[in-house]
Length: 491
Image 1 (cartoon, helix red, strand yellow):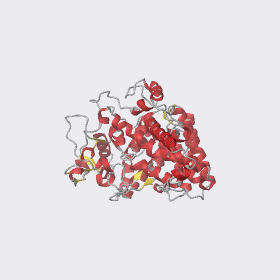
Image 2 (cartoon, helix red, strand yellow; image 1 turned 90 degrees about the vertical axis):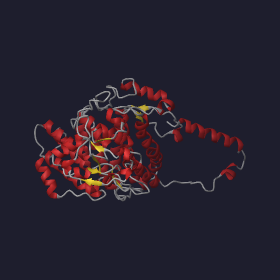
Image 3 (cartoon, one colour; image 1 turned 120 degrees about the vertical axis):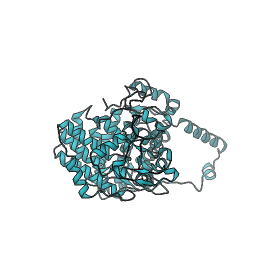
């Protein structure tokens, strides 16, 4: 992927070798200040931090726009227009800082039995990141990715997504076994659980459930098998189990740069606002507010009376929007990032019950998901508090009811509400998987069809042309938002 960079390094190395050939090469060319060993825990730690302190532009500009969470005049995703400058950032943000660390450290950890739990955690996070990448772009470099230094592979092949998923499942299964056998070991560099191996095991099982439920269209039998297996392995059971990255001014939340810019201090979308108003959702006052100015101009909240909120509408004759995302809740430097909200685990289980994959009480799981998400908001700045009375009133007003398909729609619509801000990319994947919530595409857009796969970065056509062109052939032969551009599991 970075062929040019590595060719330059190779030339520099050759030049150095030619001019420094001497029997005392090691003596005269050793840098006394060079790092001779790297702490594997530090590399894992850096990968975890870099996952959510990177630029979140692709999630807002595209995923938030596609899922009708919000709108700004800057977002190309509102009208379903390709923008390489935006779409490529997801690729760059994950492959370069995050996966570079993981692909290097995992082989190092494999050789150290005393760090078996750290080895498992690194593999789990590698699954987490690669699933996001492949669900965003489809076929991607996987088996040969990150092999430039160790195997001199500068133009990695693109693996079929189905094969990637097969390996992700294997990685999770092996990591769960490894953590079970080394549960007393501390996970080095852990930013989530203070080194608790058993909580990493819960995260791995929850990821296995997420992976399994992706397969409902292409392999429902395996989806059921993996759902059962994940439950048996032990899923997250409370908000304390979810991976939350605590940020600071030094390492700010990835949304801070965007939301602090008045151009992208976005309006909430009419679809979201209307749904939450109609359902009596107490979270709406914390999702958005009416400001006197845009944030970069020193805006302050003038009202959080939700009945006055007007979301952005695709219909030009509708009233102008007045409600923007709450900067003080989601946009500060120190806003913690929910990498995998626990509530989603409950919603996935509820759907799995409704589909007959696992046994259980779908209504209880549905209510547990709503309750967990409402309670989790208290972890955010300003400590948004949804009271027990408000939660009970909401559940009473919005019972799980109707046919099985209607209940599946209801569960996944709640998934959509709970995924606001942090998990827009996951919600986009969940919408492609289930079709819920039922969204009406922007009628003024070019295609009038919500895109289902992101085009590949243009840089790949320069640095890895043969392989990316072979991949594009699987998606209508065009690197665009075309009707045939769907990932493998989205059939």
